[in-house]
Amino acid sequence: MATYKEIRGTQIEAVATDPSNPVEGQVWYNTTSNVLKGEATTAAGSWATGGTLNTARNSLGGTGIKTAALAFGGGPPPAPTAKQVTELYNGSNWTEVNDLNNKQAYNAGNGTTTSALSIGGDQYPNLAESWNGTNWTNITGFSSPGQNAKSGIGASNTAALWWGGAPGTNTNEYWNGSNWTELNDLNQPTKEGGSAGAVYTAGISFGGRNAPGAYSTVTELWNGTNWTEVNDLSTARGGVSSGPTGTQTSAVCGGGYDGTALANTETWNGTNWTETTNISSARNNFGGGGASNASGLIFGGGSPGNATEEWTGAGAAQTRTFDDS
Image 1: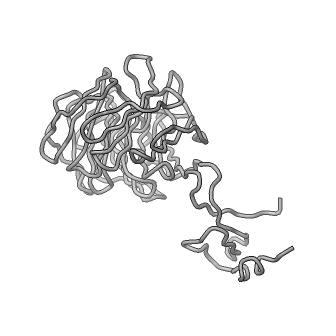
Image 2 (image 1 turned 180 degrees about the vertical axis):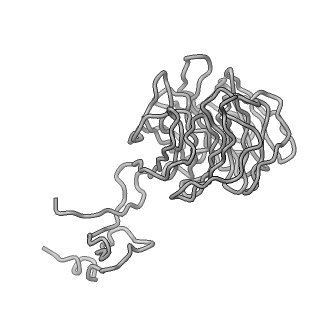
Image 3 (image 1 turned 120 degrees about the vertical axis):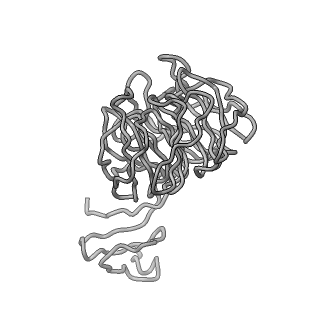
C-alpha cells in the first residue's frame, strides 16, 4: 500500500494549531488535541450548533451572514410583550448592542451588521427603523401595513425591497434611503414567507401563508420590475426566516410551520428546490441570514428559544477528525 508521503509528496505535518486555509486532501496531526485531521468536502449539507442568543425570543427580525449577523426585536408576541433587544453575532458569540427604538415582533430585516433595516411588525405595522452599525433611527413609514411581513431583501439601509404581510397581501414596496415607492405586486399574496436576495433588483420569495391555516409552496422571482412564479418548494410552510437567506440563484429554506414546527430543509439552485439535511431541532418564526445555499444560519424561534444553528451546504470544505473506529 502506498504511503501518504508517496501519494502527496510530503509527510504528515505535526502542528500545534489547525491550518487556517487547508486544501482538500491535506492531512495533519494536531499536537495540542493529539488527533489526526484532514480536509474534505461535505457530501451533504449539515447543521451545527452556534452561539446562544442572550435573550430567548421568537418572531424576531434578522439579517446578515453566518459569521456576521444581526438579531433585533422579537417576542413572544403580541405587542405588549415584544422586545427592543438587538444582538450582534461574530460567528461564535452574540453580544447585546443598542436597542430598537420601539418594541417590535414579526418584523422583517435586510442588509448587513453595519447597514440594515427593521421593517414592520405587530406593534407598529407601518414603522421601519434604520441601523447604521451603532444605533437605530426611525425612518419614514410605508403605505401598506407590515404586520407579519417577514420578507425583505437588499444590501443596505438605503436600498431595500419589502413585500407581503398580514392578513396575506401581495404588496411590494421599494426603499431608496428616503422614501417608499410601491412597485409591481407579487402574483400570490403571502405573509411569514422566506426571502433571499443580495440586491433589491434580484430576489426570491418562497412559502408563507395566504390565509389562516393555508400554508404555501409558492416560489416567485423578482427581476427589478416584475414577479414571476417558478418551481415550488417541496414542503408548504410559513414562519420561516425573517432575513434574506442567500441570493436569487442560491438560497436555503430550513424549518418553518405547517400546523406544527418543521425541521425540513431545502436548497435552491436557481431552478429547483432540493430536500436535504434537516435542522437539529424543529422550529419556526426565527431570525436568519445567509450568503448562499452553502452558508447560512438561523437563530431564536420556537417556544421561544435562544439557539443558533449554522448551515454548511454540500460541497463545502470541512475539517474532519480521524479515529480508529
